[in-house]
Image 1 (cartoon, one colour):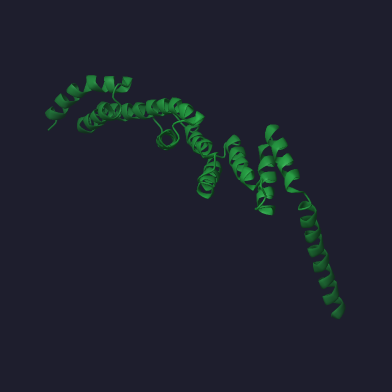
Image 2 (image 1 turned 90 degrees about the horizontal axis):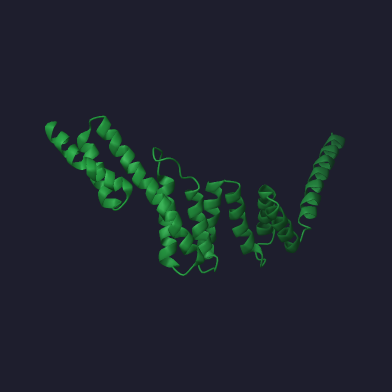
Length: 218
């Protein structure tokens, strides 16, 4: 019995020792080595390896001068992997932790891109267009002189096109299915919220006819 207990203890000790050895071996990498490893992986397009290296850096050396860089590059690597949810969480965490950092305009713009890159056709959910436009507008309002503000302005136009196109799509659907009151509300909303757009001009042409048909159905 004693021999069995001793053997069991020996096995547990050996396994624990192996774990400690591996951990010690891995943490033998310096912060500088992990930065180099992460940067090399990122430049080579090996974004999963970059995330691992930068995550190790952040976890093992949280007070290193490179820790902030690691936080940002983890977000960037997730964006490149099209893991947008993870990237957004990382960018938001960075902004929350470092609100006065010089990289904040870039962070807001990148958060907007995470949503922008998910834009779909006008018949789909427009949450990405709404969220990206909100972020781009906040960037322009808070950092108008930033180099990213101009890029954001260009992206906003695409968001507006998607949103106005979606409104027209829904309004036309109501019109085709003879739900004229609902169609009228959508056309009028389109004209009010997206003035000057090609969709608003099309809506104006349909409002009078829609009113006429809606009144007939009362």
